Length: 364
Image (cartoon, rainbow, N blue to C red; front, side, top):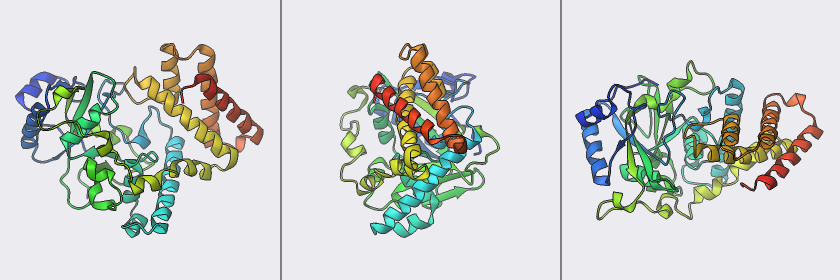
């Protein structure tokens, strides 16, 4: 995607100094009104772009120390081409299954879901079913601030402001900036309640999947205008407004959520049937826990290998456990990328090791 040079207020320019917005520390605001005032000035100064927001509990940094915002399918340093292809194979299978479920259930909009991959990817991403080349945004600073405080056990949260091209349709593709922007409220059926409460949008680099010239061109820090740090307290909110409750951000009785619940597991077991699928599913559960625990101390995108190393440094894994998990990681890569080199007995043995490890760790 094409990078932009943000126009900042004098106050924000003084704060970041000679650094880029991504490398500078976030600007601290004490109230929601104060944040909205900053956003109003930024919207006026950056008229060529439409402002969008993200709220996060952590400020994830890359190795250069800059805030980073890769779509989930591209996250991980030194991402191998074979791994990208595997992730897209999962996405393709999940998309096909989503089409089948929408058609079978005769859900409003099933014809569009069947024809347009961006709609399929948007639903899968927004409901957290699998990795996709799209990143979640909201058009509402209120929603972003609520997400920054949601499930947050730290003293602060983070709100980011991005500049994206103006929308031209419900799926807007800007060839000059190489960005696709999807308005979820326009493409999701009314049975999908979550996007309406979250004022959700999704964006990605257009016409790029497994083949890209440079990975940094896929990072939305190219479109970052400002980043703010907000206190994780009720005092942040002004009278008459407060954090959006979790029950509103993630409403119950969402038919599309219920429809999607089984896709993630079945996708892996269908691509890799039998014990292969069982092993992959078991490994994914472990990998997610490892990365989540490591990121509490190291807030940046981590591979499984990096997470293992970090947890050993933190004293959460001893040398033997770290070695065992790393050997399982290597076996997973062999199984995914060169399955012909793996026999059935070896798969069964490694799956048993994973199950024993789960009981020993008691982390999930």
